[in-house]
Length: 275
Image (tube, rainbow, N blue to C red):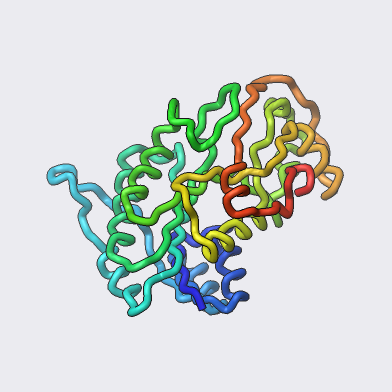
């Protein structure tokens, strides 16, 4: 039996949590809402309500309170966690100050825990929107907010970063976001991944371990977004877009070869056309 802690149990993380419960593992998770707390608890997850955002005391440049100490005490057990999964977002809507607070608090908590492996879920949005093939060795022109979050958590030992492509599966269907709309990004390659493949890769990482630090998680195939929209509209019965304009058509392709080769992972959905 393995022990898994999820910080920020959103859509993806909740799916992974339920899969691990089916595998007879123990799962702990934090959420920011009372509604999800009760749902997780009823499902057999050791749940906590916790928000990693806080207020910065500008006079002392420190965080006003440290509830992470209380949570850390609640999470301390004799055996280490086999995996700590951090699924807390760094978005462009947040200010740099907000992200500094958020991820300093995440760091503060994890640094107090005993664990074997820590994975932080980031995004391929860290790479610039420009022509090129981007793998994990690319270091220039990275999105500063996503980079800030990654760098903060990479200070923790045994930490790996998963940069996820656009995430789809279950109720997230690409075509439904373009019904009766004009598509202006249709000539861009799709850097997507299916929910089930992210969970599959996380499961293999949990059981096999990881050698490197940063990994891209995207499908091996990169059809154009307009092809994905039309395929999913046909498959799920959504209306097609009103039109597709050839604008903003930079050819950005993110390579996910490294983790697939390391784990010898076979994608259930190798192309977004299959979603």
